[in-house]
Amino acid sequence: MEIRVPADAEQIIDKLNEHGFEAYVVGGCVRDSLLGKEPEDWDITTSAKPEEVKAIFSRTIDTGIQHGTVTVMLNRQGYEVTTYRVDGEYEDGRHPKSVDFTTSLLEDLKRRDFTINAMAYNGREGLVDAFGGMEDLENRVIRCVGSAVNRFTEDALRILRAVRFSAQLDFRIEDETYEAISLIAPNLEKVSKERIATELTKLLLSGHPEKMKRVSDTGASRYISEPFFKAAMLSKGELRPLGCLPAVKYMRWAGFLRREQGETAADILRDLKMDCDTMDRVKILVSRWRTPIAAEKPAIRRVMNQIPGDLFDSLLCFQEVFAGEVGEGYGETLKTVKALAEEIRRAGDPVNLKELAVDGRDLMAAGMKPGPALGKTLNALMEQVLERPECNERAYLLRAAGLENGIKES
Ligand code: ATP
Ligand code: MG
Image 1 (cartoon, protein in one colour):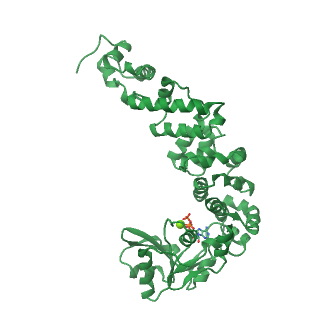
Image 2 (tube, protein in one colour):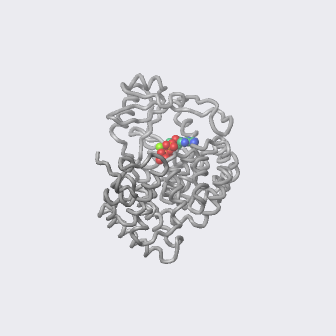
Image 3 (tube, protein in one colour):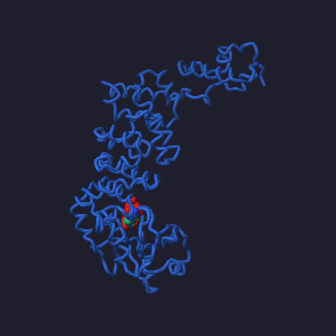
């Protein structure tokens, strides 16, 4: 079994070896290589202690020194080098009480979550596969290392990781592992929302977002949050089309939450400590997608006016995927909408206040007092221009605002 380790990672391993330490690439990169996929990053596990790693390499960063991780910088690229470790007892189903270093590679592999993630490799010794990871890769199964109940009890996040990997790899979850998930699911209440959100996002961005269904089927969704549980129930039978959406965070989350009210969708994401940008975008898509856009330029310009530029395209894309749910024949309407939107952009029709031929200062120069009326007037003028873009002319708009006599040229 040959794995093509990049030259930099190999150099790090060689250098550690020269100093008398063991070192291997480990975890996700071994799994992905064996699957014929290009790994995202190459993690290295070593018998060297963090201080020893730091002494060997000239450029290092203390990324997670308390967990034994040092990032070694080589050719502007970072490699996480982690000392062999055993996790101490898990106090609270979240954090190991302590992290102890060990000199045994096997001990380090044993603490890892799934057999397919618990393999190590280096050029000298080849593949180290102590838990049948290779066989599970071949049979396409997710299986815990050791007792599934114990592993999920130690860290309940592994429950969502199991589902996430099953979605990314399109693997089945082995029976004992699956049963343990259902059994230990209540412990998810103890896991931080940020960690949960990361796994759910990876699941949604995977090739099989419809496997979000497993989060409900296993009973896990109930322990994420009550509104999440309800949302997952509501969308359970309608997850298939999610895979047709681009693998973009806010698109997939909006697809999953599309049956909710915009505000509820935002609340669910806020509870998961999601970033504001994602929350805002999901809220807009979820509140708008059900409303058909009329195949007329003024209507289209109005929608363009109401939401940020790039989100307009996302909205059309979203509606395209769920056209059948928007309404009968909407797919056809949407084609016209797209063509007209294209024309609007080509023509450069003004669709927001910045593009209006007059601004607040113009109105004041023409004699208007600052205040709420000024904003109202601008909006009314914008409305006119959305209807008829040819009206976007300074003199005309000032006249339309009833200010034709007060123009003071500056
Ligand atoms: P990817 O980075 O593609 O999502 P990965 O397998 O690299 O997948 P990471 O979260 O980066 O996943 O973790 C790296 C490795 O650390 C895993 O392969 C696994 O061996 C181990 N690991 C990560 N999280 C846990 C956990 N919660 N419990 C046990 N082992 C874990
Ligand atoms: Mg990784």
